[in-house]
Length: 77
Image 1 (spheres, rainbow, N blue to C red):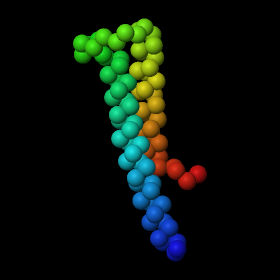
Image 2: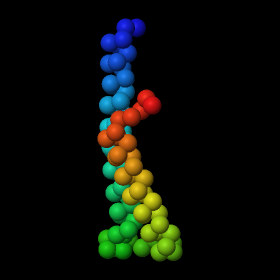
Image 3: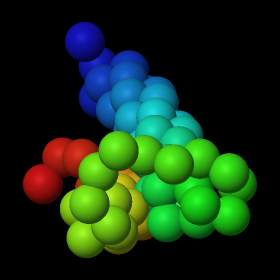
């Protein structure tokens, strides 16, 4: 394989991973927002409010990190 072909594969892989990170990050982030605002939407979960809010905040932080990782595109270090 030539260097150019390998560079193209790395760029394609990096683009694919960044799109995946953007999509999954947005989905997880929205899931966290949903958990935080679930009472306003009329959903009542049978769990303690502390755990519901903790899980919602955890989802927001992890979703934000996935979006940041997709923005950085640093998959080969």
